[in-house]
Amino acid sequence: MPFMREKVINVIKEYGLIEKDDKIVVGVSGGPDSMALLYILKDVREEINFSIYVAHVNHGIRKEEADADEEFVRSVCLKNSFPFYSIKVNMDQYAAENKLTSEEAGRAIRYDFFNKILNDLGGGKIAVAHNKNDQAETLLMRFFRGTGLEGLRGMEYKNMNIIRPLLDISREEIEDFCRNNNISVRIDRTNLEPIYGRNRTRLEVIPYIIKNYNKGIIDTLSRTARLMQMDSEFILGIADERFNNLVVEESPNSIVLYIDRLKNEHYSIRTRIIRKSIEKINGSLKGIEEKHINNIISLIDENITGKSINITNNIIIKTSYGKMIIQKENKYNIKSFKYTFDIGDTIDINELGAIVTSKIVPISEVDIKQSKGFIKFFDYDKIKGRLCIRNRRDGDRFAPLGMRGTKKLKDFFIDEKIPRDERDRIPIIEDGEKIIWVVGYRISEECKISSNTSSVLVLEYQKYK
Image (cartoon, rainbow, N blue to C red; front, side, top):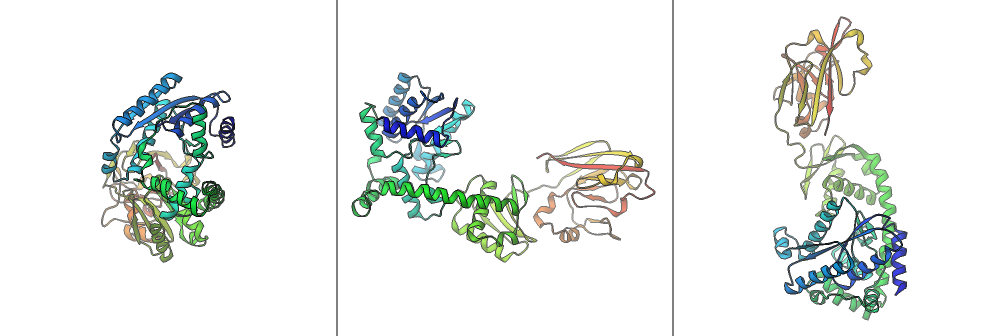
């Protein structure tokens, strides 16, 4: 069956699935799909030099049969000198403990195991045996549940570190390949029973469509997936460009976007920017549904400062002074802190992941233009007592540079349009009598440099995480 082998090699080359010296962890159950994949990859090594490692998961459901599957795969690896890795788990128990369906639990267990092997190997790729029929089943199941353009992309030849060399090969071709090449396989009898959603789609829904509507439904859905992938890539590319124009601030824990600019985008771009932002903060879109996106759209349409909503996975979305903030729920859970220090010390503020350095220099060595952002200059003769850095306290007042008299720190924060839940994270530096710097915003009028200044206190605030 050289034609099938040639098709797979062409896919591998076209999509760059395997490159020279790659380490490929192949998920092998012992069934026709994974056995065909294993032997084809063995042949591909004649053209591309790479390493094969076989991983097998015993899900602990079929007991003696599952144990026999494991021994079968082990013997194949021994015969072909493939490194063999296996794990035995209780899939039903894992599903119950993690509130997953059996199918979701099986997938989570497999990929966790595969990735652990990759980590031990120092990196590589995971090869799985999804085929054209699996693609058709996936599209139908997603369509039945309800999905958008991204869902109709189906599975892809390459997604992160996962590769699917057989995605353009039908199950019939795979079974023929195994027969014609005398490849022994194991049959999982649970795949022949309509007990899971995918099994019912495979055994009941698709045969019904073939009989009554479209004999070529497998090929039709495969082509549809490819078309959806092309269109989706184009739209996501536009969304990525727009995202970069909308971002005010981005960190591992939060993303801030301009609301007016976001509202000017087409609805399909707007929703993708929101999803992209959530995925960046949360690591995935698991649990994020259309209702969550609709609630976020309503929130930004209202654009009321201080209003917020919680969505799943501990993510908070809020609007504040014309900006939308997407953040992890515990981002602003900052305890009260206070560190007293002497000039010349380096202070580590662990709560904020930052350090403060200080020194005194003659006015003759100072370039006032360098006093900006997180480096500030103060008239040292106006500094009283030791310095300390802390977060805000009730009743705080200070004299912002350029103003006469003092004002409540709370009012200053409001004037500067600083969201309420960010205020505890803003460092305050004071001497023995007064606040001299609201870090990142303003120094005090009372200790600014003047024509009479002879010595300058230099303070620098640096983030390290």
